[in-house]
Image (tube, rainbow, N blue to C red; front, side, top):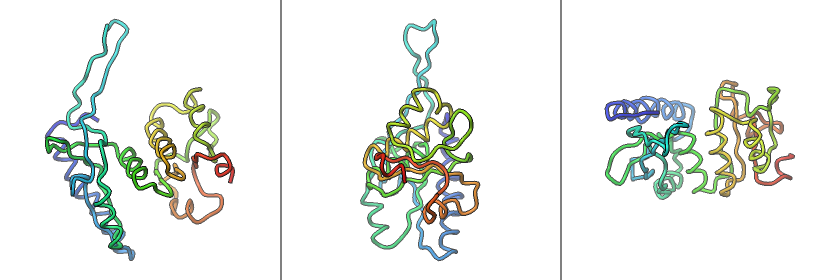
Length: 215
């Protein structure tokens, strides 16, 4: 996710412009009332620069790598979201934050979603991906997991690679008070509706309480 200044301009145009407005248009066309914003609007997402480290066996200390305009969430200004929600608008948020220096920062979208869910104490955090859900070592989808079980799956290597950041966001959100986190396959038609309105749901459910996870 190296993002230099020129690339950051493209990120803002694509995520904050083209993609954001396509989603807003679709929601409004289907009867919703959506407004598209970025984390820079109203200083919704305060960001801090993310530093990457690289360590090899022959290095005495890790090397700090400058990856440009890549950030992480420092804080969320909930008043911006509250204003929109209280006016019956659906906020569609592009994951671009603003630093203390006024610079724009490209932030992982799952990380932003997780942090917003935390500060709002959301009922659900839903993360869409291109796999069926969290899978065990034999490829079976796991669901009804507690945070403790997820920690164990990370420790024994069942969860690894590209799934780790997404699981990490879900785990942090649930541990911070979000009622449940769901990782679902966005390729499935009506996946969000199936998760919300069916008993079985789809994908992987993570909750902080064993009794809820069993449901």
